[in-house]
Figure 1 (tube, rainbow, N blue to C red):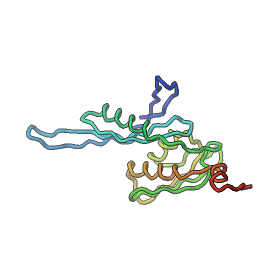
Figure 2: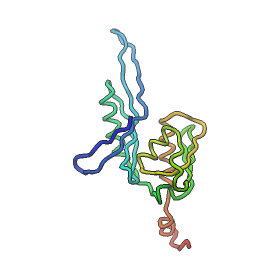
Figure 3: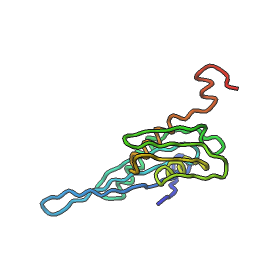
Figure 4: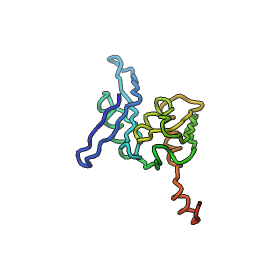
Length: 165
């Protein structure tokens, strides 16, 4: 389900991954009316990623809406030597996600939802563990909560006004 979409104005390739498509049925006088919801992760492979959720009466418009929402919600994540700078955990609802840096050559050790985020960011080596929930929507939100807490050594030095050597 992964495809690469090239943006015309910016000239950079984005990694789009459709994680989940849900179908909802509303019973009306003539039968059932279906609507669709899509969960999409978009990243540039260089440390920027976002997720989006879109709903429409057909699948392609719901995916397009989700991709548009994902492009608007992109965050910048520090990546050092293909992994994250330090161990971090994130929570959203019942989901709890733990992200740990890994040595080169380890690869992405993660489930489907967290793996999609890591691949969209361009992370090559990471260890992850998810607790309590396997719902992709809340796992994605917990993962982005964890990623938003990441700081590099330079960021911490600048914020504290000290040298960490």
